[in-house]
Image 1 (cartoon, rainbow, N blue to C red):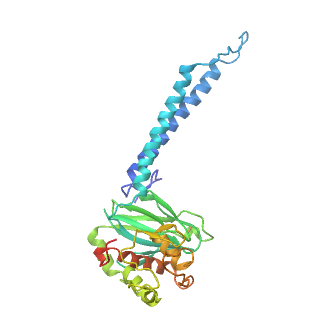
Image 2: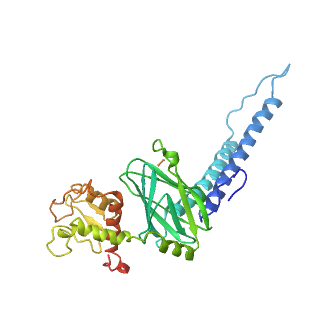
Image 3: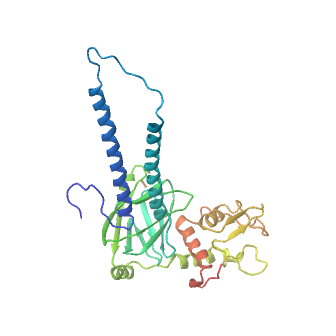
Length: 317
Ligand code: CUA
């Protein structure tokens, strides 16, 4: 825990140092130019002030070398900032393939979180240290924003569209979790904690938490309970497409266009089945809007995804 007035939040993820270094560099560049410009303005105002008998300014027109200098130097500086900032941004926006998938649902006014192993929490997120964690997030109502200052990550959580973020915690401890988007009267109470634990402590926590099924297994049950399997039988001549090996693939649609079989497409097809029809199939599917919540759609997605993951008994795409 910090004492006194903290200048920076704690440094607890792999992003903290690169983000802070860039931030400090930007502040330093700003200070250098502020001092330079303000100093020259004040200095020149004093040195060249009107005095009795002074003859006024002598105008000059054009100074190519000077103009080249004050174009090239700022261009160089902003290009360095651009390349550097882009590098950090790519690092933050590209989750590594081995990242564990956690699901986050935001609603007025709480965060609901589900672990890949099925445990659920509200306004708390327990994670193991030194493990890339990816959050797939959606809102049930308005725009929220998932913000962990100690990790230097913040991403809006939107209704109707998945957003994702990732981090790798580097220091065990308890850190603030905020909603960083004004979302109604109790926005300021939409807060929680992220608890970073040693792997062994995390395993102990997992076994002690209310277990529950994994999102994939819940999805499989739901798939049967909602009778999805009556049309998506996976057999020849079925009324709906077979999902085995389909994840991440391009799907041809009846209007000639194509779409990637991913989270957003699956969610849309469950809620608005008429939006995009796969070529060779008829428009028979009813909407499941109002019958399934965002959590359940996430489970269905986890199940459909597993059908293309050989490690989980699925087919190779
Ligand atoms: Cu949710 Cu502010």
